[in-house]
Length: 252
Image (cartoon, rainbow, N blue to C red; front, top):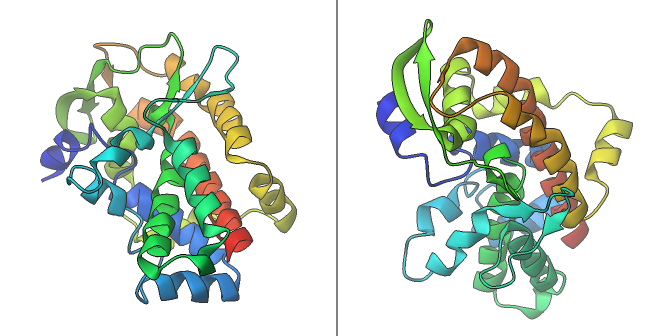
């Protein structure tokens, strides 16, 4: 089952664990009024329930136009470089925010789907593998596993960052995981929540640049890689959750 899940992950962002942990962290920081309004539009479901919705629907005829939105690019200066033709994660976030600023003027289904976009895309733009760096190869394969990590399997490095690293060492519930990594001071939380999606892209790109020193084409990566990668992965999930909460609080 583990091997099957990994093979299915290569085309997506964070796996279920990552997206749901991000949403759970956001839920912990939602203002009561914002939480109530958001859940109303989600049909009395929580933000966690729909965290992975975009991955489940991106290949349907109705939502296939959103498939390019799951990544975002940066230039050699590490600043956000918009994808002007098909859009990207930052584009999708900004478009959803623009619509939701006047959410009372839209029908419930429009509000609902744009909340779902935010729940997913804020997470994706923080995933190391979903930050596309100009001039950098991010599509190579590695041999992941060995020692405590079984089975050993060839896979795209993308899949390792998205979910394989997490699944190899974390078996907590979504709530427990969120509680374990969401432990910053109010001052630290406020600093992380400030800024715009464009500024967050630069911040993410700077912090995640280290990924290119952690794995190389064709090599075997196992426990040592996971030990080094998990602090970055968990930081990115935490920042994504806090920033998702900041957006929803500002809109609702």
